Length: 347
Image (tube, rainbow, N blue to C red; front, side, top):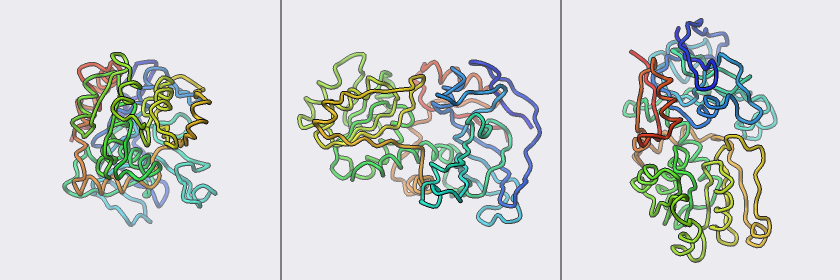
């Protein structure tokens, strides 16, 4: 089969590699249909690492995927050949203390698609995944929606970990795919006023179309002062979705006393972040980290099926599999109003 692999910084090459085979009785062979380009994929593309996770070339990235079941192991019961599926990229062991406690996303032996030394990504014609990572989708669910269920599930989980949304005053710092993946379920669950920030004006416009009351660019205005003007009492909750120190500082200023800060963004290079401890302490701000998506893929698919929101607003560009590098180059450049780039596999 063909696989598109990183071979260096900002370099990809199409390679012929062995087609994966079903080894375990619970395995599923998947023919890939669509892959979304994620910010973490871009970190590996641009720098070759995220923190201590360093790429050894050649290496396939991609973890937001959808496809069709090609074959199944002897013990697979929930999907069958021909089923259209969304793919959960996290493969947990199911036996450690974290899995038994209902926390498979912090599994002691977790393997994740496109993580160095864990598993190759899904930018290839076929992949094999455990049955537990395969979610059958309805006929009306598109392959785009099935793939986007992965980042959307992170947003759904983040909202679940935050506060009741009904009537909430919400800040979302960073209006990329993860920021919009927070905005959509927050709005659907009754958030009263949502304020979004980003350095790219086209993303702010998309956020407003998706339901944000206001969008501001930190390069053009004092965001803290503007939010204080619009919400003198402060925000109930802020979701930090860009992994920037400046955004953390702004979040503490924007929050009301007793407010909650959710950390979702992955810093591109920083190994440490800091907080203004006097304001953090005086306001008694609660900080909650968000680690991927815990049991939220199916709820995300259900929300899309019900029509709670339309995730198509996220998709701005698409490329064929053979032009995957062009897709990554565009996403990396932040040009042409790009937000979510999808890569399609040939029939």
